Image (cartoon, rainbow, N blue to C red):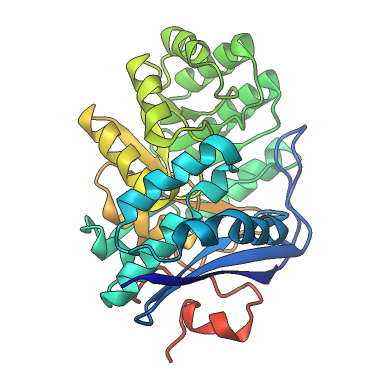
Length: 366
């Protein structure tokens, strides 16, 4: 089997309704825009796709396909994913690919392989579980009272834990984290994500409050450029650190966080920022060798499969972006996410796809 065509398809991505915000200084939810789907096909009819839904994705992916990806892939064996994953990193040395673009080829090839074998990707990866608990991962709300009300709604809907994305003010965020613990009691797992909003002194201040409030993990308080800064943070706070979410280098970079003693809870893994499924699996296995967690980042469908395939992740991350909480469709009333059943990975149904992509969309039966 050989790859014969590589295509970029422009798709419509609806705006969030209602719009939401991240911490102070970061952009909120993007307006309606053009996303893209990478489609890889073969001489035997097997095909696979990967969604690229970041702002500007359509123009960027079309350029990469026309200028780089097509020439690299046509004529290759689509089942030689390890070889092609390494080739993408070779291309990155010159192209400096955006993190979300590094894994697109890999995701499409895993989708192709799973469809060719009439299996969901999580089963093709070996499979570890058929259900996993979900936590509610908030966007940023205006007041402490709104956060507490959202927490009540999430717990009533069955979510098994709550992670805060707050304002990016160490004092205010610390007070919020303590208030949430007092509000929900000692048994509810709580986590905090700083969205890289702090320097080391403020990260230490906030981390000590999280230690006092017994948070399960402390995630990305600083930009992940300085592993030494994270090492110093780990030495000064008791709350476990979850690191290496947005840093470049997939498992290679995660290894240095672990070696420095900075990954006291574990490392982030995921298909979007760790180089696709292959990079995510390498990261998970690296963490497992050190008996650390590899927490899956993001609630898109490839990461849904990933949650079912690795042993050392704890939760599925489910975004909650409105003060009126609606449980994500993949989460049941007990707060569990169940393994996908269809072949391949599947594209999410909420986007506007051209007709030639409809058969790849979740729930499609033809």
